[in-house]
Length: 311
Length: 279
Image (tube, rainbow over all chains, first blue to last red; front, side, top):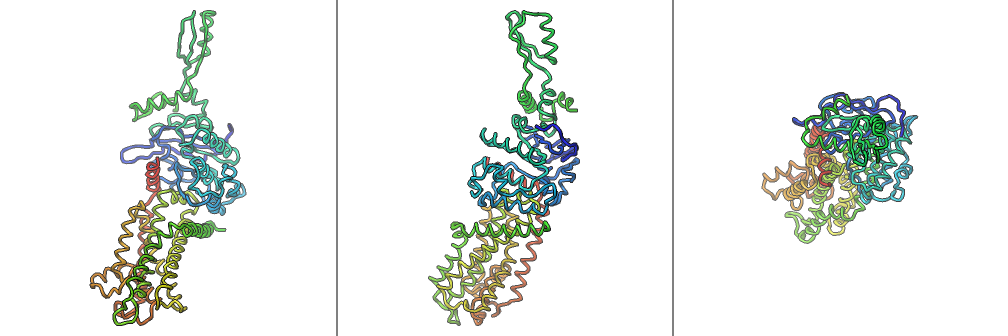
């Protein structure tokens, strides 16, 4: 995974709000994506992930806040701006009668006038077909592809213009584990191959951990946490669980500093301590607890301690 | 190359690809041809009588009207159905996500539907030439007139199709329009001279393109003397141009108004609906 990024922001939002009637779907989202970075927007269904991504893509008008995508307000993005983006939405069923190569070749043509010295747009169709592993299906009608193949085609269409910024909305919903693994490999290859910044949404923490340099957790229309997987683990699970036996009696303690606790334990009790086990709550545990707490009644706001953590 | 002219060229390519996909699909072509072919068969079976005051058969005089009806039906419904389906399955959103994609999409769609309409007309005209006598198919001027009426007809009906495609959100509800066109065909003098109808029905029919395209087709394909069976005993070229021209001008104005109202959110909402239906 890459650790060094240029600080040039590709996406920058400040106080992004989206209101339908009296409901705030997005309630002040501050989000930034840097060049070359893979950012996962993680949250349960209904958290506002798709709304956020559609505002950034210029498909939805926001209610309030400042948004810049590749230096342009998406509400006023022109065709040249659009040529620098790649979009993979949640569900496409279009162009069922077109053949895979035919469609990729066709979509690519729109990008040719936007070729630059840095980006030789578009991808040649055959190269792209190979990249996403559809060589066998190059002449298959799109409507006859399996779900996983269709999704890989969607990604191929999303990147045919060699985008500087790629949006992936819930890219692996409905995948079996093998298809998911293939897809993850593909996304990682994309991020490394071209200088492509990626914003992906997912409700699968495992996926976010595998793919993203940075994870933002969106709950109830607000970002409640922002950092690398390791940072998140430290931020939201600051306590570790220490299990041991004291003269054969099982004991459990939940402590903020496990190392100091264990050292003190041995100094005091020495050989009486056995079966020592130190376990930091996994990110998955913490995330699920977070979502569950939120869903069981706290719909109106973010748990206070978390709001402080991110502040 | 300039991005917009590239999109126009890509759109024309798109039109060709989609035209091929439609015309090589037997089921779909049967769907477009069954109505006019049924009309042909009926006229062949019952059309032996001659028009009063002429020695021209009712069957032969109905062929141009059937062509006009097919033109309206295919041009208008073809585009309307394609647009509603493309909105449902995400094709329109894909075009929106592509630089100049909407321009290419529209050019492709209009081209492919115009091509489909012409294919349907040819598919009707060929059997008609064998089954019916008296059509001026050997005359170059008749063909020139036919092409002129065809172009005018496409210009008048495709924009209406685009408006309907924008208004109706699913293909099923377009069935209503099919019924309407069939009803119009009944009162527009397609099968028998309109002058046999009560005058108030004649006035209603003359608002819509079905009548005028039938008239134009009759002018192109029938002997000149048959104008006596028309309203005012004339082919009424100026009126034809006027009414069809009005449809051509009005429809895009309506369309532009609607396009302004149609924001990304409604497109996305549509997609959400489809996603839910699929889930």
